[in-house]
Length: 260
Image 1 (tube, one colour):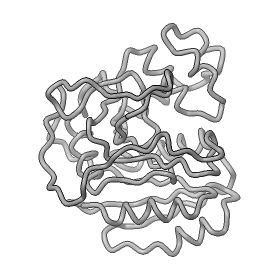
Image 2 (image 1 turned 90 degrees about the vertical axis):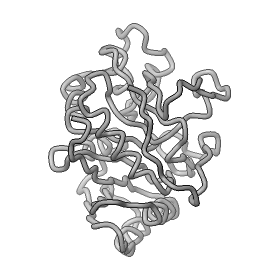
Image 3 (image 1 turned 135 degrees about the vertical axis):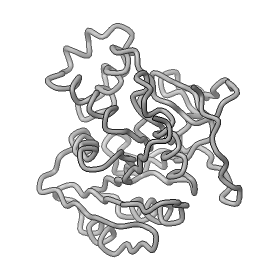
Image 4 (image 1 turned 30 degrees about the vertical axis):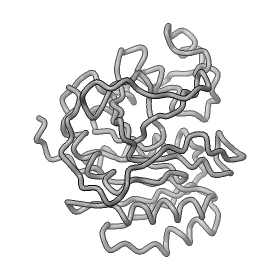
């Protein structure tokens, strides 16, 4: 049902980067919302006091804010999975790690995309991020235009992504009991991915996509960018290599011509 009523909740993951969290929350507050929207700030156990204070002090005139304080330090993989599991409470989820910045229309785009692809069995998730760099070949990347606003890739997105309940639970069912030896047997999964640390939820989602011939839908124009601030789980010293361009905030939002 492409006209179904899916209103994603926005979920922000936070642990030890208060400055990055504040920047992301400010960009979320500046975004455009056409419906009542909930913002969940999920804070890892043993998070820094600055992070907790930043979350508590953030006031929004647009969003219904909810803070979840985890009792234990879950680690990035389990934290993402715990936040993804909120699909059991909400229609759909937008997951944002704290080192991202979002575009003015990220929420409108996510709503339109998740509704359009809601019944497509081949789609495993919606990306907000648009790649400009190939992390496997370490070369610039530019996707070939197909005449639509989106294109499919067999690559999960971890820098701004949206799932409906069916998409997420499909992964959870597949992922149950999976471990490194299971990934090693998946034909077509890049060796580089197989070598990613066990703290990466993305490598398991990548295995899920490849083994089941599924796709993430990506936008040609990015609705998020990754600042990769120092202190992250996988890019500890920080990097600017994954920052991508965002459109000017002055432009209007048009209905998207999604790739069928």
